Length: 123
Length: 286
Image (cartoon, rainbow over all chains, first blue to last red; front, side, top):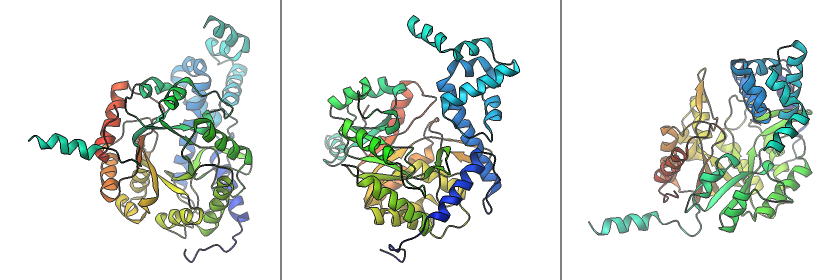
């Protein structure tokens, strides 16, 4: 169609650059050169906020019991920590709070699979 | 006087190959969607379905009403430099068969790299290397799909430092290389233009609008000087204006509202659908 037409192009360099970018956004790696640091910071924050929303859906009592501490405390915990899925993220975050003695009692209940079973049976 | 309502009615008839106004089906708003008397298409997040079934009850009822259901993938990572995961492609193809889909859609974006999940759609550099990566993955997907695929350009909060192509050339090249259709999100067009300080109409003028399969419409919010396409706010008037501009150039076969949280009362959702219908010239479905 155009001057780009299908000569084979290696994507090895792109793979490395994509990996560097994701590591900078979710794993605390340095910003890759050339990107606007202000915009990467905004993207990092948006990713954390979206992740907090997903964790709140998976662990509604945890998010509600933290009240005004949510979502800032979760976002601070999750910054630089790669996403592991909402269930795992929420559980690991709650365990961190439990070890520090700052996990609200209601949220502690939500962590027990048997408590979840009791809630389900009550329907 | 008597002719006017007739003319309006004739104008509002949906052409046989058009589906008019639809909505992104989500469990939280299943009740509202079920009560839309004349909706003819919905989209569903593919990753929320199990290809072996059963369909969520609300979707099953829509299917019985012969409402077209379009699975919309969000985690294939077609823009990843690594080959797309065959299991994710098989899942999308399975969802399409499960719902009897006429079409599936995904994004021109990547969501993981180097073993890390980003958790959201990330932009690609607009380079020939990225065109090659997307085209290779779209071809891999197409070989497993029984129906066409439409590709959606995303809203990006940042750009790569080394773009070789402008957005229209980048997208057109991908569509030409793959034969894919375009899923045009006017809220993404709006967000990108606002954040980059570019003209959204210039992009509409440069895109191959005859390849648009359908259109996404959504609301967002501004934080710290950037517009975020959150899908959790009402559709702003500027986005409705873009629908008018788009339809003045080329009326797409279908447009739909995307809402992904902070769900408003049913009346507000219906009003948003009506506003999209009125801006596009399609009949209301409420």
